[in-house]
Image (cartoon, rainbow, N blue to C red; front, side, top):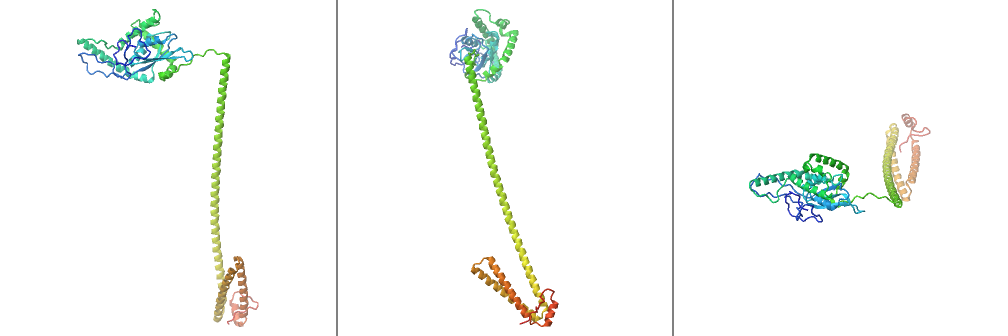
Length: 457
């Protein structure tokens, strides 16, 4: 495809594959790279208007074309779209079942100005049916064009003014002058109208008269009607356009056509397949529920086992604490019992010593001394006897209880023998001394039946 009329010259690039030139336009030998930022070179002249505005960044843009009537082939669409600028690629969606082209496609233009021109002219001029074409871009391209359009307008205006100043100063007019967008739109509108008239076989293009009667794109009434149609069509196709514009051109998959009438066998087969799918989904759902229940049951069993282990550990700790407390209590009780026994034993010893000392107070000095010697002798004998008994019990291997029993019996026998000896010794005591001791001793201390105070020996 060739550049649109009045468009600034661009750098060379290979032409699009399979895209013939539009009707009435010379073939293109070069295409501008998408990343180039050069729009047009400043015309040669002598005039100067100060620093030129910065040329806008250029890039290829993809345009969605919808509402293509049935019967419009790709060759005509390429010619129609080529009237607005240089095409890089045209991709029309087709029906995979029948292979017929659908009512929408995607076109790539080399620069943003050509996309803007197509969006301005095609819905208003190129009416191929009752409904005008729907043209939209994606969000990224829309943001790019929003910044690109005012920058390019300012740059083109400056270049046109500089060109006119150079011509007025006597410089030669350039072979390809820089034109304003309105001038380029006017020439593109003429090409579009001629192409539509050629398609209709010389008849008037539908809607072309109303679109160009008052000066082409300058007709305000026609533009308002076209804008209203675009809004209505855009509202009707918002869902489809949003879905398609969010996808890359190469990822577009043809939408399925309207399903033809099916035979009863096909309907029954489809119903069986749907029933099988429903049953499969039910089985999967039941399997998921069963697996979830199994997992829940395993989790519950693990929790129960963990709780039982924790309870057993807690019971063991409580039992150990109770055993420790009981052992300590037994030790305290044993200590108290031993202290009580020792205290009782000391009390008994004190009582015995007191009882033994009380009779001595009533005895004469000689009697008291003799009694003291006898008591000491008896204690020494008792201690010696106790040691002999312990040695004998240890040698014979008797247990502690039996040894203690024998020791107790021996001690009792010795006590009885000593008591008899004391009784015999006390018989020689004089009657006055016996009466004095009896009167000085508390009642019940000695026996009255023939007991006498011990006499000295």
